[in-house]
Image 1 (cartoon, rainbow, N blue to C red):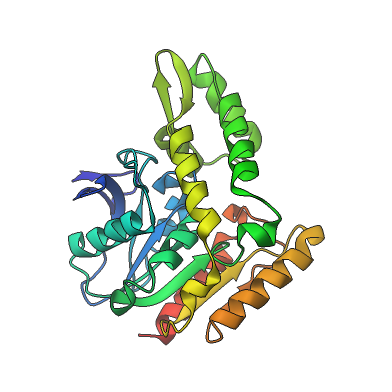
Image 2: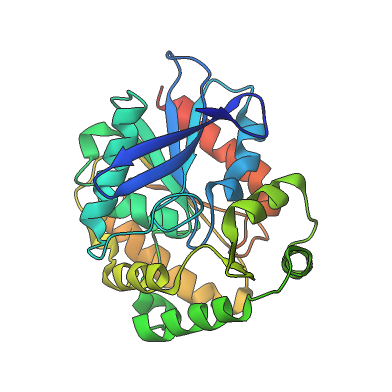
Amino acid sequence: MTKNMLAEIDTDIVNTSEGTIRVLVHRTSSEYPWLILSPGQGDAAESLLLLFELIRDQPLNIAVFDPPGHGLSDDPRTDYSPKSQQVVWESLLNHLHVERAFIGGYSYGAYSASMCSRALEERIAGLVLIEGGYLTMTDKGETVDSETKSIIEWMRTFRYDSWDAARQAMKAQVLPWTSYDEAEFNASVVDQDGVIMLRTTEITITQMEQILGQYSTDVLEELTTPILLLHSTLPLEKAEMRKKGLGLFRDHAPHARIVPIPNCGHTIKEHLPFVVNQILKFVAELN
C-alpha cells in the first residue's frame, strides 16, 4: 500500500480472478458507510479524485477503482462480461471488508454497477448512478459498431512523440487544468515504444461497447435497492432522447430518486460540488 497525492488516500492493489485491480481508498471510520465508484470508459480512478477532496471531512469512506484495462489495472480477459464485472465488484467489497456499501459510478461506471446490482443486491446499500445507466444504445440512436468506431477513431488520433506534446493536447480539451487533471493524465497515458498514447486499448473499448450494446434498464426490474440517478440536462437538442430514456428508467425503477444536474452536459467536472451534495444527502437519509 502506498500513499497517493493526498495524505489521506491509499492505493490498494486487489487481486481478482479477472486480474489485479488498482483502487484509491479514503478510510475515515469503520462506523461510516462506504461509497465505491467506477469511473467512465477510458478514465482512470484519478478522474474522480476531486470527490475525495470534497468528501474528505464527511462521515463516509470512499473508494474509486480502475476497471480492467484502465489506469494501472490489468487488461481485461477475453471473456470480459457482466459476470467478470460482478467478480471485480465483489472482490473489492471483500478486500475492503465491507458487508454492504453504496456502489455506482460515472458514465460507463454507472452502467457497470447497474448491471451487477441484481446479483449483488444483498451487499448494496444503495446504487449511485452519475450520468449513466439510463440510456441504451437504442435510446441514443447508436449501434455497437458505430459507437465503437467513433471512440477508436479518436483514440488513434491520440499519438504523440513527447510527453509535453501529449499533455498540451489534453490541456486544450480540459479547462481549467488542475492538479487532479494532471494526476488523471499520468494514470491514463503511457509511453509505448516511444509513442505517447492512451493506456486503454482498442480491445478494451470494443469489449466494453459490446457489453453496453446488451444493456437494458430492465436489469433494475424488481430491484428494491435504493437508487440515486444524477443525469445531464444539456445539450438541449438531446432533451427528447433523455426524456425517453428517463421514462423507461422510471418504468423499471419507480422508486429511484432522479435528479437533473443543472446546466450540465455529459462532463461533470465543474458540477462535482452539486453531485457530491446529492450523494451525501442520499447516503445520510439511508443511514
